[in-house]
Every structure is written in C-alpha cells, then in structure tokens.
Length: 240
Image 1 (cartoon, rainbow, N blue to C red):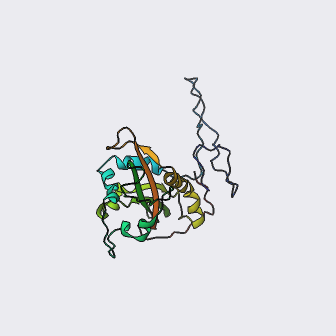
Image 2: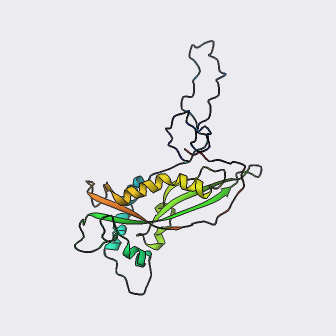
C-alpha cells in the first residue's frame, strides 16, 4: 500500500497492520547545568519506508516552458503520414484512432476542431529495477525508476534524461512485486485519468496568461533498462 507523507503518526497499514512510522526513541539527553534549555524533541515522525513521488502535472508545465518543447508537442497538428510507412509512434493505428473524452480523435488536427488552443500530449511509460552496492561489505539494495517520455519529441531527444518525466522511485530494498508496484502507481494512474478527462491550464511561452488547455494520454509501456533481481528477507512494503 502507499500512503501520503502527512498520514497520522499512529496509522498502520490496512493490509498487514504494521505501523507506518517509527516509534520515537526516548531522549536520554539532560539539560546543561549552565542552561535551562530543554533538549530538543523530534516532533515529526519518521516513516519506516518511504519513496519520492513527483506529480506529472507539475513536471509537464516545467517541461513545456523550456527548450522549445511546447512547439515540439504541437507537431501532431502538421504531421503528414504516408500510407503503409511507419516512421514514428504517431503513424500507428492506435494513435490515429484514439478518442478524446468528447468522442473526437485525441490527436485531432482538423480545422474544425472545437478548441484550437488545446494541446494534446502522448506519453510512453517505462519502469525498471536496478540494484547497486556501495561497498563490498554492504548488502545490495534494489529500487525501480518509473518515468514517462513525451512521444511528440524527436526520437533523438525523446529518451534523454533531461526530457524524461520521473514520477517515482521504489523504496527498496528489493524490487517491487506486481501487486506492490500497482499499489505505488495508484497516485500516478489517478492523475493520468484527471489529465485525460479534465486536463489542466498552464502558462507557457505561447500563452503567458495561462490560457492553454493541456490533455494527456498514456500510449504505451516499455522498459529502459535490463531487469536485475535481488533477494531480500523483507516481506512487506508499506510506502509513504
């Protein structure tokens, strides 16, 4: 299960009933004889296990405001396809037939489309685990990087680290099972549904007053790295 960082400090996992936060250790410090100041007490509870998460809606706005990416994402409006020739993901039947919430083509480039100021963005998702060892004496630690690439970018820019939208890292110390992965992906999937159904308004170089509407769709899944498994004695994953 995955829980927000600001969960109550006494919360336990609804699946395995294990506490999500560490119990604060009693302070052994004593006030100085020369000072009446009491020792500081740690008030913010520390999670037993945690992993970073960054919303797509935050990253996509930053992405569109640099490197001419906004213009690149408009390429579907002028792209010409050749029958029988597949040179890009947008030439495929799926991209050509995907529907938007209003029933029209998602990548609609027709002159009579309802909103000419709306930008449609396709994403491809990739997740893979990897392990690393800090020293020869340290145990291995595995994590997984979940990220999206923007399909409108030219292929030579699509997978550059600068252009990938990294949403989360697995907490480790072992690679997530399929069930664990789906639990930690729940927040991202919920956001993707919002970005598809409702979209967001954003300020971009072409629309400095925030008049552009952005809708996003998840197109495909792929792996960036070779999977490498590692063993672990841990039997649960309650993530914040």
